[in-house]
Length: 354
Image (cartoon, rainbow, N blue to C red; front, side):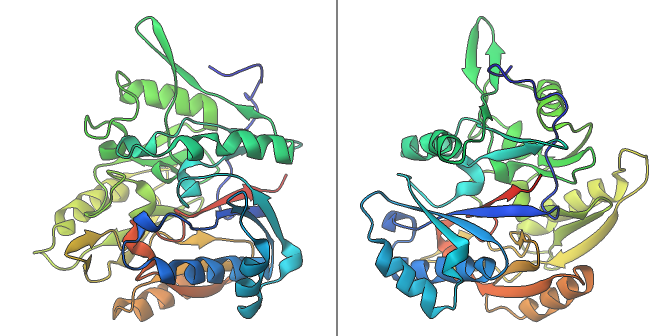
């Protein structure tokens, strides 16, 4: 199951638990934002700057990159440079939620899971991303575990992205059948629902599996949960809803809402469900992109919320202010970032404190 490391008393903490830092990868891959790349470094810099004011940021740069020019961009946005640590590590893309470390903690220690990353079983250029965690483990001196699966007589490294799961730190987990159980973009051939539940139960210390059906249209990951439903406390879940019956997301999100309304926590109590409206569909170069307010990041003192120059932006900010009274809501315009098929949560990975 793992290499030489007992993780039985560890758990995956919830995002709102105290964080030590946030990992972010600086953007270089112009192919991910054809025609719009020039806007992307500034959007990423705004996110780095906002986080750096209250907590540490680990910023991954391409080896050979001139750090000075990036520091200039960050200083213009009033980033706190003393809170930003620069690491030179090669990567393919910026979506570190999906290839970065998935941390586990107990009362004294921290380790992380290094799942295999295979480009969402869709893209071919992922080899650098798949090696990032080995560098992080070495540079931060945090041990990693390498989950494997046995299919027939062969053993494989298990594939799983951080955006495919969401936990409440108290035994419950959100995931989708579309991402983990579909034959399309299949991550782990030969692995069924009960095997996933057994493995993730052992790895993350979760017992209560809430399987939603599908993710939103335009999502090239084929159903990541962090675009549709997120825990915001042990007993509260925010979930996306679509009012327009003619929109392709209407029935998808309606079905997911039904599942959530019936779901219970490990103590058998129903969750409080908070509905978050979807923005109007966004098409860039005639391609629908997965714009969703659910791709937010919870930090120690702030919430970074993706905005899309949409009438629902203001509505959603109000809902977030009501539900995160102790954190400041900071909206980030993601109307161009989303052309890379990801937003704030996708491009960040939080490291918990112990």
